[in-house]
Length: 136
Ligand code: THU
Image 1 (spheres, rainbow, N blue to C red):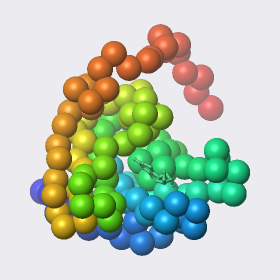
Image 2: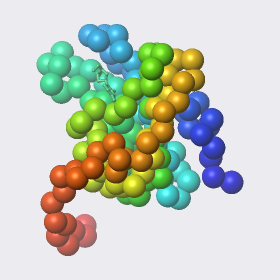
Image 3: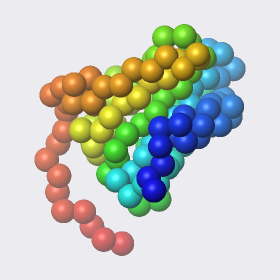
């Protein structure tokens, strides 16, 4: 059975607990579901330089890619804000690189949920033509 959205929300909430956000105090958790039913979670990791900060969504997707996954069905993003928070522009482009048709599910503190397909949230995203990848 593929994991349901409740399971993804639980995974995202667990990751959110590990968020390193001493500067913004804004903790974010994400759970990414691959086409094969695997889940990868992520949290935001801030940095004293500010610019090196990594969002929860990118932590999840980079972890997934490192594990060999490249096709994604959906991502759940959770915060402690009442209103659901959608991925930032950089994360939208990173998600778009792999799965433009994936679903974004943003969940607020009390469970308010907003769903949208990435291609609707981020139409005409930037992509380069892919070249043959070198095997190692
Ligand atoms: N952040 C995320 O992790 N995901 C988003 O979609 C929005 C912003 C993080 C980055 C930073 O650590 C904090 O939230 C405030 O911008």
